[in-house]
Image (tube, rainbow, N blue to C red; front, side, top):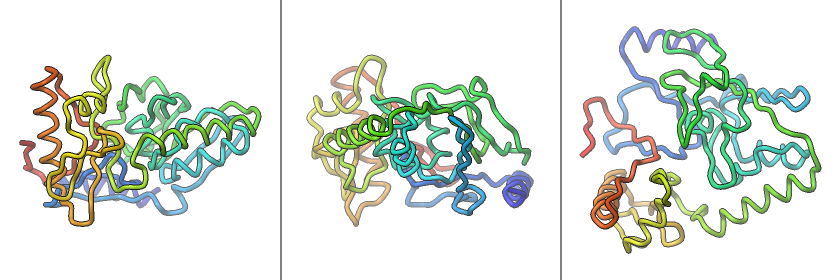
Length: 263
């Protein structure tokens, strides 16, 4: 933890931005790279899980799917909807990961962060400001989260986890390379449904293609470049805007060099 604080302080002093890379879900890195420091929370200090009753103190580097599965098998309910979401706990907090089966923020009570000033701080649920695929974490680095789950019947909780996972495997391209859902759902609508109605399933730009299984996913082949994905994003947004007068907002976090502009 002291090394992280020292890194944050030095980066601030030299005006170098910091990004945290977890499982890579909801992240697209420019072909030109990223001008800054990339942090991975894969050391033991960020992989700890401590339990006290129905409260779990979980490190930011803990992988969300295995942790959620373990909780469900032991009868702790609240994270079954995280089945199939390839994230770390830190990323799940920042993006309020989730879907129709629930959101990660529903289980969060507190979050430990390192501020841009290098200070360790605990944020309350109210300060975190969870919303649809967002939080108010800002430039703070999430290092751990305090979760509150509900103890119940292990058979029922694990069955629910399995059902959520099976539904996602049936409806989403989980076995193909992608950055997850590309767009947020507009108010009262489904981004995937709009893209599908626009006739864009299977549309390709270079090595990137709109998934034929779920239109809000862009899947890639081994030759794909980030620029292929970005061109396809622009094409989708233009077509949906023209046909449905709806502006789609990206859900993924696009990392660019400083000075890089979005077309």
